[in-house]
Length: 321
Image (cartoon, rainbow, N blue to C red; front, side):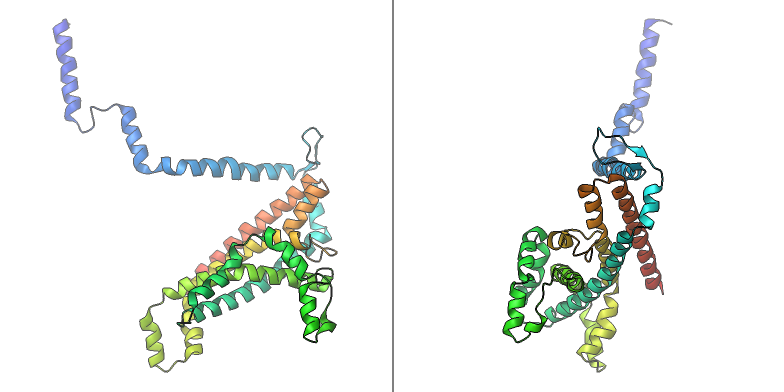
């Protein structure tokens, strides 16, 4: 083949490629355009972070749960298999912490839901200085527990302001060391948690009520429904989705409870305010039983995922009826 013929063939191929849509661009450029159009580059950093950090940490925690190890890199670690989980199922403190978590969840979720719903309905009633009240209700949610813990320890101390108030209103027989008695330490922790998170419940209920059409409420009033009847029969059912979401968040939050009981009571007295989070910290940091602490962490993860999925399925089934 002559040099002229080869040149003509190459020119013909180039012209044919130029005639096809995108034929003149390199293959790499085409793949790059497709990748950018799919949105993968935008989510890739988050995927790397989740897979590389969170899931790796979960897997490593599962591995450590099979060891008898004190946490020091240079210290030998003995493989004990499922021995840590066997010990956990026979551990009285573990079951006590689980019981505290269940009671804590039921009490705090119920009271927070009731108070938050009431405040949200009240703010929708054209109350004067409503914006001021909204800020007052929501402020505890944004306060760090580490800054408020010393205040509450001082308030509920034997010689604190709460006992001082009881003495000055003639109820001095109720004064006691609230954080040092088994029967009163947990109610104090619950009360602080309710005070802290009711603002979030209020905001979510307030937003849900704002989505209810005014025509529905006006129709109820025309039919003779009073305020309480309207709240119970119309507003409350229409906020069922918000209540379900709060139930799931409250359940997972109860399982992860750590900061308030640790900063105020450190799980005491006599494990009266022990939660899974505080017990994991005590076992790992103070007792240096990293393997056993990892086993409890895996149990906590399974409970959180299983409980959250079960509650979500139940809520979807209820919505489908």
